[in-house]
Image (tube, rainbow, N blue to C red):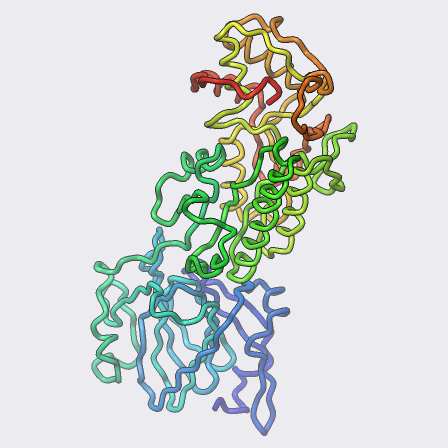
Length: 487
């Protein structure tokens, strides 16, 4: 036990000291003592997270007791985070970054006594040598031990790491297993935690695939790959291995959602499935990115909608999206991206207009709904920006910028940019457009313009919609068939 008269053990403030290994941070702990001994708060979530410690959600507490000075253990990198401290005694600790990336192989060493602790992020190799007998090395971890988890190891005597052990390794107790670990040149780096993109075949899913590619730690899933309504979803994957889920899947058949069966499907996909994702993300510390819609608003505002404006959906689809948003806000690490009028790789309004122009058709197009187009590369880039800059969690509006337009305005621009006469477009009201329709039609918000100031303040500036439209038309060919002139 630390001597109660030791001045290094008492009077410290809770203080964090970064190391050369990203995320590896040494902490001084307040220790209070007298002639009887000492007391410390070894883990205090509220104080420590306020001071900058990640809220890493520990679920297991382990203690390694070592009889003799010189006992040496490691170097082990596990797929979870650790909060390491010493209960009694002293250790010389050595940590090596075994994660993929530019700091792979970086070494940090220091001594720990009961007045110090260290936060060890996932993938950083942990090892120590006891400097006193009867030393108890303790650590909190944020995942339960599993034999199926992927570990990474490094030999204690690796010449590249060149750790200067206080007691030579040939004079200490080391397990045969630790002696057999590979040298740094033969170590397989620990991959980052995974990113899962749901709705991989949708317009946004395809844009994210184009942006992120086929990196080993990024997975793309369709409903056939992972049904979010399955009862065993909590155990369908080893969720602790995931860092981010992007929910680009949704029931978006706005008019169908007004029918009996469509209403059931919309609530199942946009609410029930979202609730299942929210539970998983909360339980495993996953960042959940969720795509929302301008349909959560009633469209009566005379100015662009901000993220703090109250929702008032007009349609079943809008109601399910608003309900899904409310659920997502309960996830500690979440981004809700409200967007509108999405255009990407697949059937959409712009392709329909392009096709009609080529076929010589003069369509009637709604001219009393106002908003902005959102091209999926912009949406994908915005998601990437929020994740990589670690922007504050919360709700963000994201569309392309520029002057708000109507669907008829956009149709005329498409005709113009593809070499056709924009006067061939006839503008009509929403009521007139659907006057002869006998199936249920969802009410639309007449004003859907979203204010993008908040996301621009994080450093991301969406491009003007008209520029993106011109680029889009240069790069794609019209698709066969039409899906209506409304969009």
